[in-house]
Image 1 (cartoon, rainbow, N blue to C red):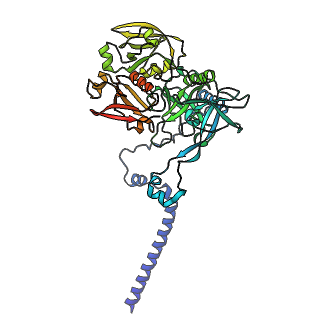
Image 2 (image 1 turned 60 degrees about the horizontal axis):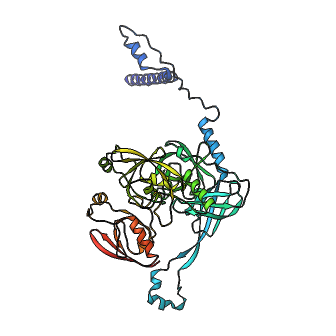
Image 3 (image 1 turned 30 degrees about the vertical axis):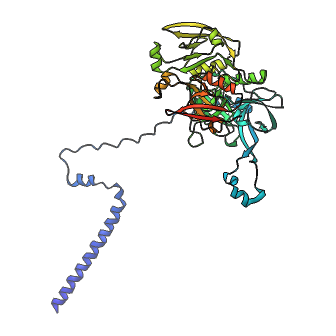
Length: 514
């Protein structure tokens, strides 16, 4: 019994000791928990494993203050002020132009089938149906009494034109005149004291210069976009016969046609006309008619009721580097005279085939299209000074510009490079031996090379195509553009029989009477 009592006492002591240790451990844990934020393993190491050479603890670097932001500008910068001022000057003079026209809806070929005509009976329509369609564009007020510049394609064929001003007044407009060859049109509203946009000198603009495009894209009136002049003298874009476009990256969209391209002085330097786009919307490639060209067309429409253009009577073509080298010219800039039409101003001035025109009135010429446009914009009767390169020497010639007649080629005269639209609805150039060689054609082949055919024209309906070479008209040989035009004039609107060369084969093509 004594042994049992002794065992019970020992067990009781063990349990009691365990409880005491547990209580002490809990208390110590609570104490250390309160000081856990200050606990560092390094302190423990220093306490139990002191180093022989204790080092001084380096305090952490003070937190770095964030770099100060650049000071905000006080007020508006000079560039922004110029943009704002130009926009404020231009916006009141830019208008919304809306139009309505009547168009014919072509009949479905199924409706011409005898079966369908018998099935539907006498109720079948006999003629193409007509419908009304409308659209919108922009315009620029250029006189206080209501003259407005816009694009020909905005108002062409319209039987009703309305103009909405920036102050929301609406007016009916009448068409004063149009010029499809430059895509310029002049309309007028009956109003007075209107805000106007002054003309700038488009010849003085520079690539990289800031410009504003002002118009009504998508019908959103008084829209201003900012960009730069991307290029000058753009030609062969396929928009008009006379192309000398200003290219800009200022956003231009459907509805901007006819609107203003303005420099930062608030002056009109161009009429916005078209865009190059795969999507149909702005892709940063817009084109504007230079203000100098638009003003020339406007002045001619106001003074003569039609556009009068200058004419020399020469056939021109562009210089290639190979041609320039063969003539001994240092670079391939200028216009090569391929043919001089007898009885015209160029012949009277002593210009000959093979001359290369490099300057006009002291200004260098870039290419044939540049010279063609300059002559076309020169009033008839004006004396112009030409610098030509002939047989290794430069010579000066003075030419009195003539007036281009309707049957004449555009601008600088018919010729290999003029690519002006002929009455048949085609563009052509004289097939020279050099050109034939470049196109891998028979070097002895002569005629007029078709460079493009207008869709829906008589030439298109007859089956003529780009690359065909016209060799004869009504059994009369054709060797150049002048021959072709004379043969067409002699036909007097009657049927025309052509002999063409297509891929080395001769074909007859009949063009019916007008």
